[in-house]
Amino acid sequence: MTDIFSQQPIDTLITCDWIIPVTAGDPVLEQHAIAVHQGKIVDVLATADALQTYSAKHLHKLPQHALIPGFINAHTHSAMNLFRGMSDDLALMDWLNNHIWPAEAKWLSKDFVADGSRLAIAEMIKGGITCFNDMYFFPNVTARIASETGIRATVGLIVFDFPSAWGEGPDDYFQKGLSVHAEFRNHPLIQTALAPHAPYTVSDAPLSRVRMLADELDIPVHIHLHETNDEVQGSLRDHGERPMARLQRLGLLNSQLIAVHMTQLTDDEIELAAASGIHVVHCPQSNLKLASGFTPVGRLQRAGVNVCIGTDGAASNNDLDMLDEMRTAATLAKAVDNNARTLPAADALRAATINGAKALGIDSFTGSLQIGKSADMVAIDLHNLRTQPVHHALSQVVYAASSSQVSDVWVNGKQLLANHRLLTLDEDAILENSREWLKKIQN
Ligand SMILES: [Zn+2]
Image 1 (cartoon, rainbow, N blue to C red):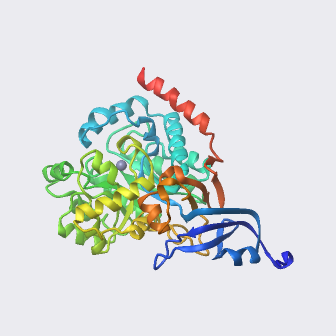
Image 2: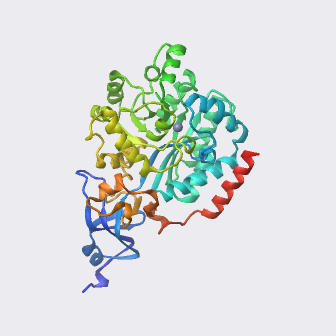
Image 3: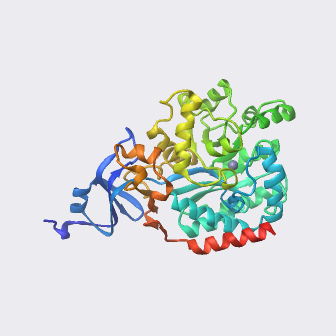
């Protein structure tokens, strides 16, 4: 019999058929529970023992569910959700020059970013994303919306050579970015990164200043790099060197650098990536859709480079679905490497969780389900035609589960999704608001 007086009071206890903590050895713990108190994981133990040991304010019994660390979407442009499906089937520079940048010139505003971010964050929470790394204009607005919803975010302090509704040019972008950094520097869930858009949109002087500020503020640098062959050829033409060599000359290749895409890499550049400790964000669906090229995930991993996964923005993907992205990464990596053993299921799940945390410098407190870490967790209901029978829970999560099977989400111990229902966002209002934007943009 349970003696309730000797039980330890905690906030939350979650019992599941499978816990996949994404820790050394890639265990799958059957009939286990996670105890959470004051936002932190305080125990991971067998369910029978957990029910004896703890008395929880909130007890969630989730049979047939797998509990995993929340996905970390390591690269997105959340407000661009409002441009989803507006201009498909184009190559990167045609898409940017003739469609996206003109649309941004017309529509970019605080309201656009607030509403687009809300739509994106709702989509991300429903799909099990507990942290996203954003790069867009008005990062203060995206940070504010993220903070209202309880999701974890790193917002990019964007830098471009040219003006936008957010800033007049590099000096103004830096000044505004620094004030966003100051505003959120003590926020428990929001972090900042310097975000020079790409080597072809930011010249040497602002890139050097990015390097200086990254050292001073001790925050990551988030940049699109070697996305297409056009980018590499343009850099050879304009600067006489490849983009990565240029960043090396400017001192930016180090463990603070989050390099997004990296589809065009020589053997020497892969070695340089490993030696300099940069992190690579692989966005396979965006690369496939824009025909940008293939990131050599297997070769990068064998060289020792930390590879994580991002969805990119919804205008080039066209969804923010990390389960789907993870599966694409796992299958594409095998084809590109001509090796079915490349990026196996456990490694794909690492790339979508803990590796993203490493890139963002937040792996000491999120990215895996371990005692002492923040309770950033996602329950996936495997009691579904597409994931039965459960021969191996990790395999079902990576190769078969759909984001519609994500049932519950917690960030820092706070529940944001309960039985598929958003708790901090009004889904109907977001849908209505998106239809309003469609009317405006189409008129
Ligand atoms: Zn991008």
